[in-house]
Image 1 (cartoon, rainbow, N blue to C red):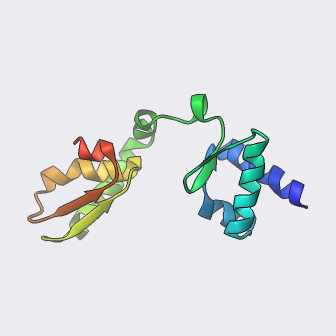
Image 2 (cartoon, helix red, strand yellow; image 1 turned 90 degrees about the vertical axis):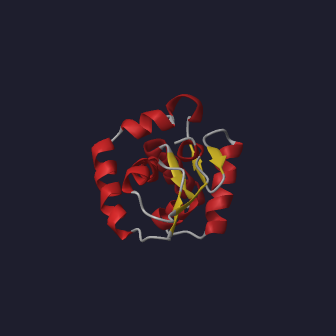
Image 3 (cartoon, rainbow, N blue to C red; image 1 turned 90 degrees about the horizontal axis):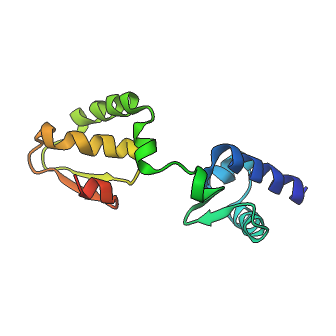
Length: 129
């Protein structure tokens, strides 16, 4: 059973390339501790690479770069970002993560001219805007 679950996890990662720990737990109906043990074993055997908060496969040549991911579904990301703008009030604070969809929102903020808006981010691309 353990080996079957680990194989399923390896297959999931092969298909998805990256999965956060939370998604691994949900998809396999396992605890975070079990997921971590399985990830450690898969990493030990060289099948995956662990990351902070998740795991991925074939990082060096198959994981798409930020620029590649930014180009995927860019129209949908921009549309979603435009839907967020009306919900940002004057003087509010917005936290923008490092993904490409939040980046689409960050691109729109200067033209939105929201008085007193504070932006907090851990994303270098957002900081560089």
